[in-house]
Image (cartoon, rainbow, N blue to C red; front, side, top):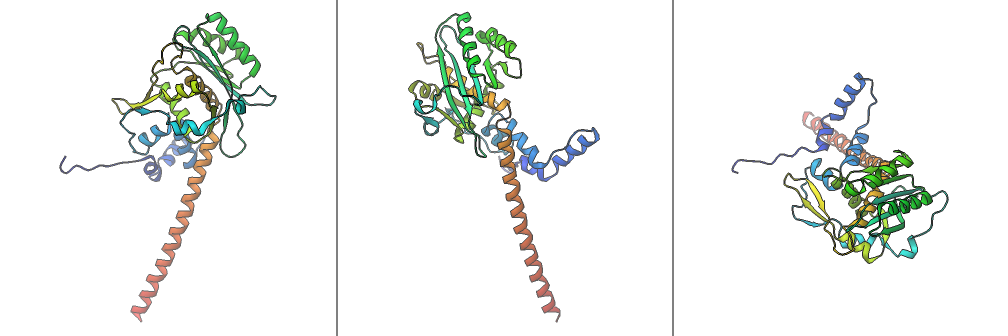
Length: 307
């Protein structure tokens, strides 16, 4: 359109114009705690469904409009390790998280156990156990799931409580309590957030999965697309036969979400915010030095001309 111009206003612009201070002023009036600019930004990033969504919704960087693989083959390859290296029995003191995707006739039931082995400033999750259950009655499935969870004692378990998984999900949550197990509905809201979080974790090489054909096929079957309202979403087609419906992928997604639910990524995002703050401080210091030098130069010229 002739005369039209594109105007963008990012979350960084809002921060520079004092949105955090405005929020803090209201919080103080209501007797609530205040936050720093870095903490507020880190919270917004952590709560975004994915890094793609954060970049699109907060940084005005549009996502690719074409449908594509959610996780590219090179990313899956970087995060894959031989099964004999990572699939290990439970050990005392391990920090475990579980994801359970429930199926019955066409879909598989898959239990995925991750261990948090983070030792540096970045998170690291390693797959320790994967169990697949095919076409078994729910009573049998429930017993096998409880056997696994009782043995591994995960700090948090996320169960797909949508449709066929509702009853088992409720029973698991009831047995272990909501602080250790949650039955989650996979909806148009939760699906892009959960899958986006897994994509984000793998893109940063924070997750090790088994180098296994069935696992690879599941992960590579997931597609990303842009909805009619510009939202990012994901589609998992049925692989036919007894190969399920991306069930290994979804159980791993739920295990990662269980880790995030317990605050596993929060400290990382806060550290990233500190890095940004430190870089901004260094840049401000350089700009201040430049202003001082320019001021001296102008003062010198002024004295010369007056003399």
